[in-house]
Length: 159
View (tube, one colour):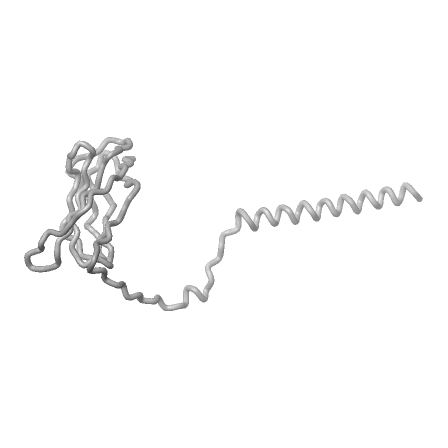
């Protein structure tokens, strides 16, 4: 009789351990491997147009820690933008640390972006510290009066 209880207890323990292991496996799968599902309601909502408040007292200059470019090619897929709150044109130029100009944009209107970058020269694979973007800002009038500008450091990662 005691042996039967012992065997029954062992079976119960094994079944409980299996159930626990399955529950843990399902929990791990749910936390780490399951793809989040998008809510249908979120996709059905119409896009909300936000009015961008123009700032005439200052100029917003985007900052970039680093830019990734394609090695051994002048044609790049990267475009740089002029924030929509600005009230001036941008002309953006990319320079190496030694002052070598790699690229210069045309006038970029607020809320728009440059054409894809076409470099003046091919770059070899590597990291170029000390490169910088020179932002020249121009009034949106017939004279395109030059306003203040900015120079921001950027690391070029060429792959």
